[in-house]
Image (cartoon, rainbow over all chains, first blue to last red; front, side, top):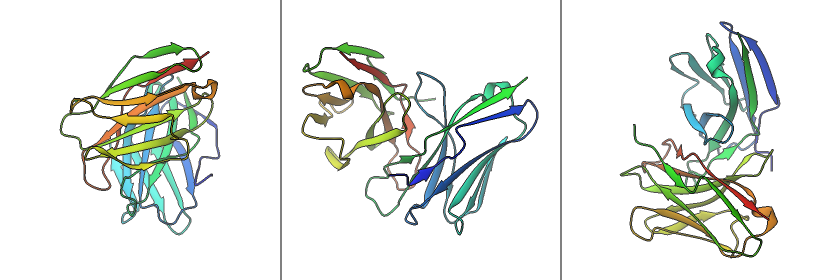
Length: 114
Length: 114
């Protein structure tokens, strides 16, 4: 069941440059999307979210873009810092469900090189 | 900033034994969830809980699993008779209560079944 896909298992970026992490989804009922950051042996930490009524949401160095027609979202980190090195998960939920369960992608390991 | 806490951080048990994983949700959050992540795989939804009853459960959440809020604060996941394949990180998450709001995750419990 691959409703949420992150096709790049890893990404390496130089410090100060832009990191772009991508996520695709197949379920058109999804209307709320989130990005989480995760370090080994820790729980996912919420970064930023976007509702399907928007196409962009920005919070400091983090911006999420949503393209509903393409069923694609991306997370931009500018400028990238070594502390951003972690696994990034895209997650989605369908408002029509009573519970807001999250469907996660497989994650992208971001390495920011000093 | 309020956090979700989980105990124990690690649990080793023998196959067939019962385990109880505990979570203290963020105060005034109304929705509670359990997820798990088997090593190398994606984070998977197990169950959601609202108003003292299960809202939704996944196929994984079979009769060996149960959840409750025994004292109105702790939120527990019980596995009655553990199997080797139950070895995973188990994450509790909580949400304030309105739709399209963020789920905040605890640090996880690493369960190893021998």
